[in-house]
Length: 537
Image 1 (cartoon, rainbow, N blue to C red):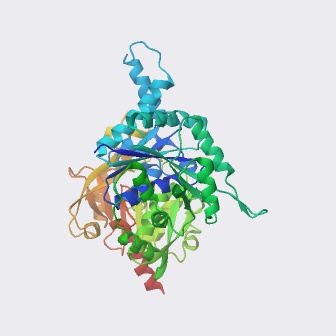
Image 2: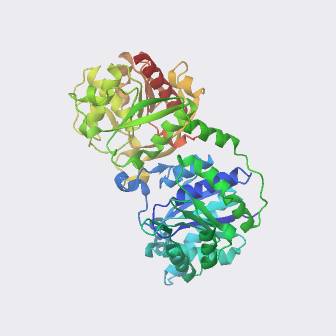
Image 3: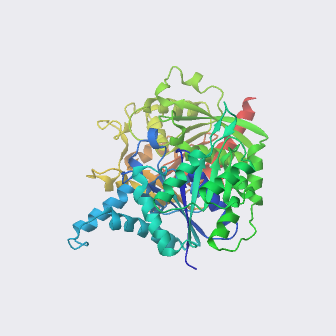
């Protein structure tokens, strides 16, 4: 059958959880046996979300095919356990760039290029192609921003056209909205939602489903009022209250019959969902048997969303161990040789994540040395691996000025240098080594034990690598370069065999972790942290 479409929009205010709602719907429909696809349309002009500041937009999520995307794609993958492609990420910048390139190639034959039909056609084409390429029964498309935002208008107009073209029985609108509570009067107010619906109606769209975010349960009177004034079926007015953990939201929305309503609206068979494993995972999460504390030492700790996939991967591993993983957020700019022992006192693991630039590097190096010398379990990701090489070269090999040429171009010992294929590249973002790449693991290594495989694939985002001129010196001093590219050229993973758990990877394994399928490296790291904690009791 041709794909059916669900468009998820937001009303009243931003940050209502459209992405989590969309992801939850994806999980519920997949649990009913439907093949689903997910897509995010962002109204900002940036072409490459990977160049957005993590302090403004959180992490850049990397897809298998090498596209940096909005962090909502991470939610989609974690909830649905589906690996998305780069076409799942659409921005106004990408849309306009494509149109301008076509115009310069003469594809418009000298005609005037306009928002309608050219911009809206480009948006519609991207929506249809992504659904078709995925083979989805149901495509779920989240529209970033809020109804009424000027920058979202072309996307909403494209949806209006799209719905008319495919038929309203094949494309529905889900509006995530806010129902505020006025403490002074003790009332829940529906007027803001009514206003958002009128905004939609003004451009020719009518919501088929209302998902209402509120602090308190919706009364039947409130549901009936919203149905009456918003021209929505009473059974299609659903509540979405705050959850103890994000992964409870699909179960909460199942109780609200979200997927039932969507199937009914699209004329699809409403099958019995398989959610037992998901319920069990949530129960293990909410009822841990113990806890452990690990330090996340990074430069973007003021905005936790900058490391959201890392945090989730740690939590996923904790669930498998029936352990609450508590994170000590450590701003690497504050860490010095004098205070590192006090800063990391009591933690049972240290993790240094990815990043770019020189800010906070010295603090990360201090944390790595502390973990290595004090036998504290360590996991390094991307930059965290590169700095593991730098620290080892300085403090074990005695190469005191060893560094990455990214951070110290004139170092006498460039243990991390620019990848040959990156020489002369001036553009940023998409010119990085991006996407999924293979890695061959050394048999008998800790990494091989954790993965249980000779050849693995992980996602990457970098342009610097280990300088092969220093391989022999590193291995002679006790470091195992336990993961290499299949051609043997690129060091992908390292470990210290004499350390209880010291492992670092050039990749970003956090992007492949799932709540019901934790990543092996994080599973091993959290397990080692638990053992460390038991030893120190």
